[in-house]
Structure formats: C-alpha cells, structure tokens
Image (spheres, rainbow, N blue to C red):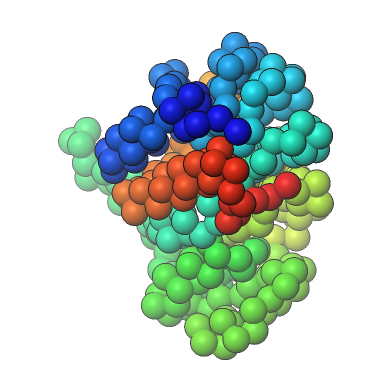
Length: 322
C-alpha cells in the first residue's frame, strides 16, 4: 500500500470543489499529485485511457468508465463516484481488477428534488417563454395550469422521490407513487397513495421519473408506456436518460398526446445538437444539473473524497457498490 503522498488521483467532475474550495485544498494537501478534468464535459473512454495509466484513485463524474478505460489503469484502486449513479462504470471489469467502486447515496437528493419541482412548475406555468417574450418587448398571454387539484405520479420513491414528494405535498395536489419496495410509513406521513404503474399512467396529470438506471428500467418509457399516459399530461425526468426511448417521446409530443416534457438527463450526454427534443417548444432541456447546487455539491464532494482516501489507505469504504 502506497503512502498517500506517493499517490496520484484523477478528479473528473467539472463542478468538484466549485462551492467548497476546501475540498480541493484538502485533497491536494493529502495526495501527492492531483489531476483535474478541464474539458468542461464528462470524459470518454478514449480520453480516460490517456489519463489513467499511472493513477491510483479516481473521483469520477459521469465519465465513460468501460473495460477499455479500466484496462489502461494498472494502478487504479478506487473509483469514487461523485453522485449516486454508477451505470457508466463497468462494475464487472472493476471487480475483476480489484478496483473498488463507491458512490454518495442521498447526498444530492434535496437538490435534484428541488430541480424536479422547478421543472414541474415551469412546464405548467410557461415561465421561460413568458420571460423571453417580455424581454423582446412583447406582452404575451399564456395558458397556465395550477398544481392544486392535479394528480402527480412519482415513479420511484427512493431518496430523491421522497424529497420530491415532501416538496409537492404543500401544493394541494394528489400524489400517486410507485416503488418496488414502497415505504408505507412515509406514504402515510405525507399523504401519498401507493399505486401500481398502470394506475399512475392512466390517472396522473404529470409523471416525474425517479427510477434507477438498470437493465430492467432501460427504455421503460417507450411507445406503450407513453400511449397509456393520460392525454395532455406532462413528463419530467431528472433520473436517468436511458429510462426514456427518446424517439418514442418525440412522437408522443409531436402528435400532442403529451403536453410537454422537461428533461435534465438524456440517452447521450451531452445530446447531439440534431436531437429533435432540443428544438421542440414544448420541451424544457437542462444540462444534467440536478446535483449542481451548493449543499449537494459540497456533500457529494466531501463523501467522494472520504471514500477515495479510505480505499487508498487500505480501509473499508462506507458506500461500496461492487
């Protein structure tokens, strides 16, 4: 086991330390050499292969950490994910190479939930086009919808789903929620109704996705799913891009079956400029910014740093996922 001062760590989240500069100071004080991602974007496998050759630890963002990248990292001992998801990491290959993968569960729940509610409000009250119109010298009139009296469906009632439900509870809407392992006590406390997906699809005026990215949930929002949604309803996704079959969503929006969608995540990130979702007036698109808020960034950064250092020191991390 190396002394920490003899270790090299690669830090790829572009927002790491942006709120709490002490994170970078602490890391650079403890570790011999620290290298940062300066591209402003998640790194591809090819880019990582050129950076990981002599790296001992990695504090990782949404980078493509596949088998090829891991094969180029003979000294790598730990990948500490800055966030909860790890679907971009080849866990099987990491385990094969005895590389520990960790995450930061719960750290960004409040921040992502707040963005989800913000997107919901912007969908139902067209704040963005109203702002743009007034700034152009216009005085536009838009039809808006109140959350009060509406039915909101939450697919996924984990940490983020729960925080979203807490925030929606004060709007006077009915909340239907589905989870594979529903928390009945939480549902009773906040007035949620636990429901099956079919009931949520047919009854909800708006559906917000809070499911994990797994083989079982990939493209779960497909043509059949969308057709079962209530006509004129809205869809919000702050969870994982691969939950949605994007061409199917485009068609549902084009034919008016859905009134609109708000997306913070995409099948490919960043999405191609030609992605038709980006040119649709009834789509709000944000750049996977759910966790990019002061409290969440600080907590994720501190947790990821702790996990990375624990493994490099030969200790057991708290949030190992492989």
